[in-house]
Image 1 (tube, helix red, strand yellow):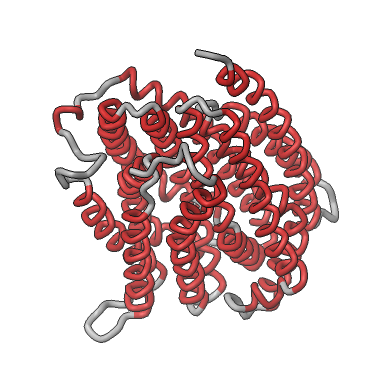
Image 2: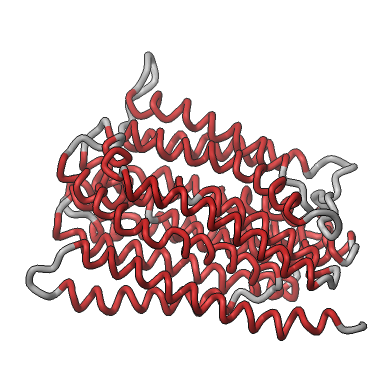
Length: 450
């Protein structure tokens, strides 16, 4: 366990961010390598994996619901120096993760075929997407337990075990993916499904490896079977914080599903270009996402310790870091988007769509980075509803006008990209106003004598 309530906040942020960033760099590298190998199979394969990969946003919504709730309540207990409560909350979060993962597995497999047929531009793309999801859904079902364990470790300031395990499993995934996609020696050629099978095997290894950490008798957090009896009061406490954040990521899934529905009439090339652009953006956003993961436990422990000045200083330092990182990424995407897309696609039509998408969307990168940091502050203070409200307004500002515009003659995809970019600035304004209100209602009373 690491005490984050004393010492330099910038040092804490940089240290915890660096651990998360190592993990995310390898995760990003896997995404890009995986996309590179799938790209060798053709445009329809790229589109199929992109459509199937949208399920990741649903998983992200659900796992963030669990992870954010776990990080918040455990970090508050650690800040209060209440080890017994932190231990109980950790074990309850693991039971909740297992139940949620099992439900996702059943529902996901049941909806696999209707979803792929509805989202795909042609039957072949739909068949490839369904084949991929057959293995990818079980892999994502197991992801719930992995996320819950990692979130608890972040809450106590211990990022190293999660970094080591995640990095190793990503490397394993990168090695297995081309072998299973193309077939090597006696290994069968699985095509696009091979990428999903590689993910499934890597996650299985990760769960066993990281789970072993919590069986150590000297571990600050450890599995206690006696604490596994469901405690609905604690589940409500975690979900009360995590559900709004989960819905927020769910809105991201709605946005992606909506875009794929609109791009469907433009063909598999448009879907592939958008899908590649999305993967590149996910890769470029990893530093600020890692920063967000660091902000929540740092600010959360200080919030639990009743140190409002350190909570506010955490946001200030993190915001400056986010601005610097996202400015650099925006310049790269604005100057050389075709080169980025061209690494993963050879079809000129795919490159053209992806290039337009990256160049236009790059105008909102800095604003998006600040939104990530602000959302992490809401998580740290145990109230994620403001972030959900801001995200909901953003989605409304995109979906409703885009639905109207898409029915007009001469509609072009760049209209949707400009609309999406502008909506982020409205989201940021709402987040900052809400954060100021949270300071007054939640932090200022902490400065008064208890």
